Image (cartoon, rainbow, N blue to C red):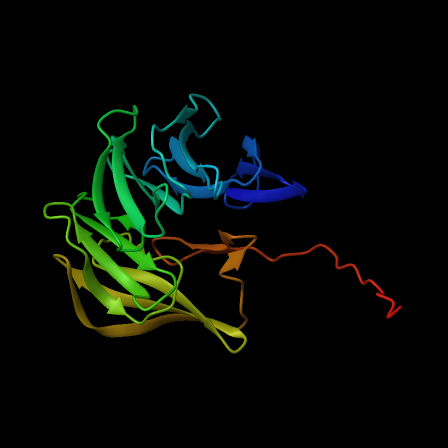
Length: 248
């Protein structure tokens, strides 16, 4: 899934095959953001951040059917993640009147909303057993990658100080990936991980000989597949306008 910006104050959410085929428009809105796919690719989540007026989170079928808005009240929604069993969705954002991000979980039918943890970044992935949430703090003093066990809802630092946008659990569930951009290149690291604990130091898994943007138009601008075989990233285009301002 990806976002296009066809006009000012308008975005479109589209889904397609990995090569761009079978493209389908899923939703339109003023400022949409991508969430995650269900493991069987039958559903996906997305959000409309809407800072200052209240963010919204949605679940929809991969063919655009069955759109559901979730009954959550955030000032701004940062990310949404579907659980492996597709019964729960985890949504992160600051609540009204707060600057601290809070993670909530709610049944995909909109019932049983429950706060999970606050001030632990944005949840970007969940393990196949539904036992651990991986989260990333994007800015500030707590920047880094964190973990939240669903059993005790504690915020546990895994890689403090790491500056990245997403943490993605590998397909075998024994490690996770994250990307770091610097000096014209992007490095993707693998961190071994078992039973909620990191093993050893992060290892360089892949170095891309060019830098791609991690953010574009307030949205995450790349995604890494769980087997590291594919990276999808945005390459912003468009044009710039040059103006002359007279000194008179």
